[in-house]
Amino acid sequence: MVVLRRLLLALAILACGAPALATPQWLNLPPTPSLPKPVRSGLVPLNGIKVWYASFGDGESVLLLHGGLANANYWAHQVRALEGRYQVIVMDSRGHGRSSRDAQPFGYDLMASDVLALMDHLGIKKAAIVGWSDGAIIGLDIAMHHPDRVSKLFAFAANSDPSGVADIAKSDVFNAFIARAGEEYKRLSPTPNEYKTFVDGITKMWESQPYWTEADLAKIDVPTWIVDGDHDEAIKRDNTEFMAAHIKGAGLLIQPEVSHFSFLQDPEQFTNDLLHFLAHVPSR
Image (cartoon, rainbow, N blue to C red; front, side):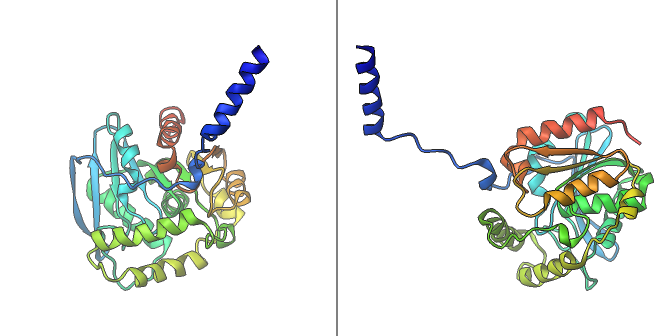
């Protein structure tokens, strides 16, 4: 009788159709969230351009730097989680989002100088820096050349040289991001019709920068975590491990079941890791 019941149950399941398997979260690109209401925000004239920023909460300063082609809105989940205990600052990198650009070629040193100029404008001597992709590279650049301005660094999905970048041409997730970034650019940018020119300029930077050796990475003595998703479409794992191995005392964290867009795909996991880093890794 028991065997018969089990057989009937199995036939019923087959008749109804087996439940569809959910798409793995690393193959999804969740919507770009919206930032909460800031304490203050606006455009600031810096280095010959206008940089948009927003500040939330109060406490020790934490600066969130977004990735290439994106904008500060991508950090909204993390801002909501951090603003109750930190002063959280986001900014649109030059040419990205609401910030303008000039004729200078894009470069990580140049964008790092924009970050430092904004910190000076806001009266922030030192901050914890959290970077994603290009933002993480900018954070590493600042930690390497201006360590007195960085208390600690959480660098997600960075690369140390162009060979560390994988071929993203066949990635549906990354192609969806590029298309979305174009629509966001049209909506936010002061030059909404220049997305192609903007992408061309960023691509030239990606093709040649950064180019850091073991000796360059060894100069970093700021407390650092090198972080990535285990399914990152854009960053090669061996380059992530290379950076962690050559930055003195660096932690290495590979987040499971996520890609280059971990903070959107599993914001709870990403934010919990970030909160742990900020609370438990001693500042410089």
